[in-house]
Image (cartoon, rainbow, N blue to C red; front, side, top):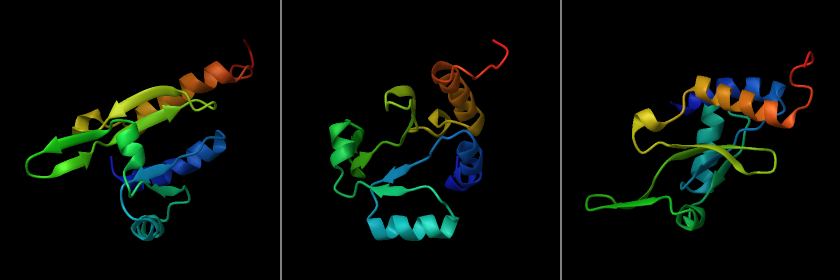
Length: 119
């Protein structure tokens, strides 16, 4: 999924008191330019030194590219525990917006006593 889809999704997330963050290995100035070009309101954080990527063991080594970061998508609970993890090494491993909506629904059911007002 391309980041422009997340730009549209950020409005849905705001209604549900949720946030979106992008972390990349690009330099902060590249992230800032990319964020501005997309019109994104959510933060783009830089792991240019790849400290987080290495700490979470999110690397892959190949002969042609050397050490590269594997793209992951995390759905995090309010206490920052991982609810769901998607490995985007292959395109089909990346979450769709519908999968992220299902994650959001499941997380909201866990943390919001008033999720179903008739329950």
